[in-house]
Image 1 (cartoon, rainbow, N blue to C red):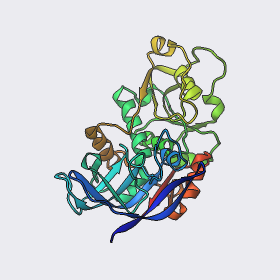
Image 2: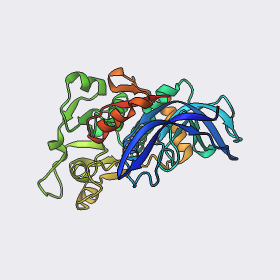
Image 3: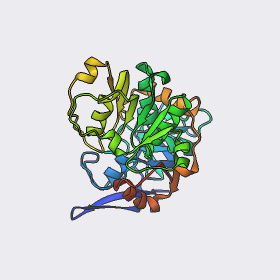
Length: 328
């Protein structure tokens, strides 16, 4: 076999579109492995790459997909051999390196994670970078002293990939969870997320201009940024923690230092892309064991390469929910 199928994004007259094409194999270099991809997943960064966002992907044509899980079919690595089940996630995969929306990927050994015991390739991609980011956010809260008795945790973007998984992990760890989303959700959806209550955008988008607000929650996991993040910080209980991992609302943060110096609130950054490998493995092992959640079919949608464009458009228009896995 000299080629394989992949979802290739091309640019024509300023318009970017993705189609399934045949791509030729290239020779394996020392320290690299070739992985037959069984599943990938859709993340917001993938949707940006597929729509020509040069802040994510500089050159086209390009194969997006920042996640992949599968089996090693060829190796010039001392760390991984043929037949090993692996996860490849983050780093430059799917950004400026051909990504997981392909039957095969070819990557440096330093990007590869052994598949945790009892985790399947599909389960790994139901989590994907979004689930990893959610778990890393929870990890950062715990490492900085967050406890359930300090008050409920607000999770923004609760119907999205990061938010939905963060809610479920927090619930498993006995935290009260306030699920915040731009649209209301049913009692059934709240039960699936493990949330005890919900917020609409109004409650997390303070427009008063006051430097601080009445304490209202113990901490937060935020994917929005901008004034939402500012609001979460201004109303956080003393010594609470707020994590930030996204800027779909805005990259700006306009506020005073008062929540930090008068209440001891901590703002914790979460960087999934360049997370050190030892911590990366620890987080994946937690997802496979102690932090494993019920991967409800109501929050997981499956597609093949031909159906990707539909879900990419849903994500770009902020109409997606849960997780989308791509079966190769």
